[in-house]
Image 1 (cartoon, rainbow over the protein chains, first blue to last red):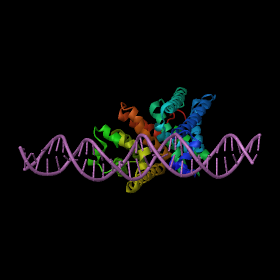
Image 2: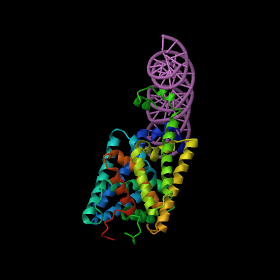
Image 3: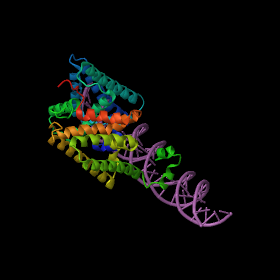
Image 4: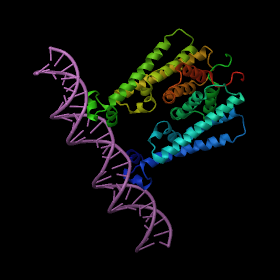
Length: 167
Length: 167
DNA sequence: ACATCTAACTAACATTTGTTAGTTTTGCAA
DNA sequence: TTGCAAAACTAACAAATGTTAGTTAGATGT
């Protein structure tokens, strides 16, 4: 709190004119982005497009939110564990719900023939880990064009790295 | 320290008969695995095989080390920032060196025609993020066969998720 | 001009945390 | 059995941390 206060040019005690507690800062930041992801997922789910396009839309969603909310997203990988009580239950509920929805879309892709029939637990984890860490990459490469980043992520995550002339 | 002591069935002060400081626990754990990765990389580099096979070997290396050192590896994503002084310089040096070597191998793959000519910064980041987070997935799925995990990671990270009958 | 509200301040608090000093217990070698 | 080193203990420390209480300066509306 003293560090935050210093960064804002005031005393630690003064912060309490604006917030309830240290916990409330963390839970507000984390639950807000969790809701952004949940809303984005709902939007993608309601689209009338092939599932593989939904998967691409999800990658785009991550890239877009990462660029827009770079700071709060950086809390997701390591800080959510410090949430307490109602907040941590709410957060993990949203996260689990999101991951389930993500896997469902991948399963649809397999049904539709656009993805190989593979271990969804592993591959969904693989994609989501990369997307989770995108924030740290972006914070060191802020000059990149966002559309190029989106395109390249879609390519490498979904379509792989291999040269197309070999298979 | 009091938590660690409780877990070991002793008082916090007693820990200091075995260690120098709290910092030294962290830096010993982190530098040890950093060295494991560095050694593994050196072994892969010295192999006389096509670069794409080296890339596969690196994925296997991560899977193997993740399974073997699950607990200390879990410190890598979030705790290395708490290293201080010489330790943090040593750690980041090893990490940067490792990532450079990883990218070099990917570049060789492109030269040899086994990978598409793509943004190495993005794709290497993508693979390494997944591998970094493997520990958390594994700690929830300890029953999986390690060879299947290796194979599936290689497939999804390098060869992509797409069905092969479409392109 | 006055009352009100906002948002800053100082001072202090109770805990928590990493660590040290000094002492006692334990286990093994002689 | 004695002697000694290893490793446990108790007590206490200084610093850091989240927070509260009470106060004050500055802006705003009447």
